[in-house]
Length: 247
Image (cartoon, rainbow, N blue to C red; front, top):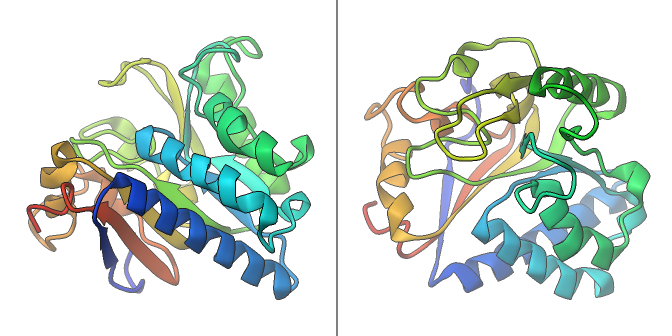
């Protein structure tokens, strides 16, 4: 699945705050460079506490950056299938913390349908896949992913059948081991259509999963789904010292 891609890079920062500042600055630089080359970069955001910290830094630095935010397209690697105003929605968190502050137009933001919009996570996954086929650029400029203590990425969990899906771009997930139980996730097929993949990981509780993922041959895709995603040109693990403590 990830054959022929460059080996992962590792960047370790002192703490989560330093990590968030570094990631935000690097993203602004990548977006500006892509636009200077004539592109309209597409990115995929993630959720969680470290993503919130990155979003806060983007809200602080983004308005005065060289990025033309009207020419940035936003997706998510996964989403919780809950009502649109639920605080559990990754999209709602990002809109409040970052997207509104930099002024990305609504037509450039592609959310997963909520439980207010459609009857099932399966229907939401079908709509999201269709949107990606229609509005996606064939690859993401930057994909950002968190990693769970169990090694999951997006909503692809160890031992779950979604790990074996090949070809479909998005899938529904039921009975998630991490609430909320119903979710929609991009598949490995979609996630690996990324020029650059960044794993954003902080905290000692993630250290064991990070060590497994970055020790070739020590684990399997079924045990540690994070090993199934690589950028076509770059994969970087942005870690704080706590999450890197077992490397």
